[in-house]
Image (cartoon, rainbow, N blue to C red; front, side):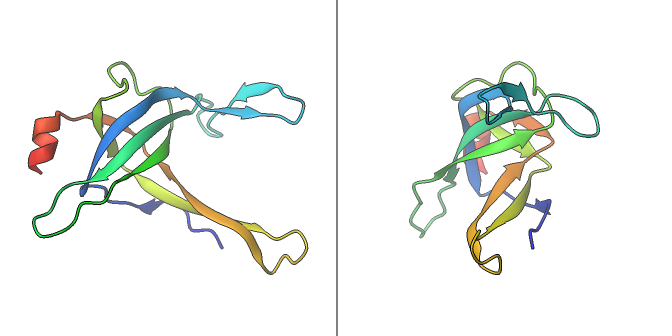
Length: 130
């Protein structure tokens, strides 16, 4: 069973854009590439790649961080280039499972994916103080 749209709180992380938002695309078996559109609004969806680094906490070792990809419902607009610090608006996480082809009772692969309603630019000094 896949869990959908679980609210996620990332206030303990600094999020920096490592790949600017681009239209999300899907490649068909024949090699054609088409943009992914929202089923309800028909708008082209976007994806942004962020580096999520834990905010230092006194007395704790700071982790290295992870790169995450976040789906967005549309173009977030100007000002979201590589190196920009951001917050996610209404961030959620979703899970997925792919059953094993031989034994469908087993899970061959599982994972999670992030999505957000948008991006909000954050000054690094203000975010570091948090």
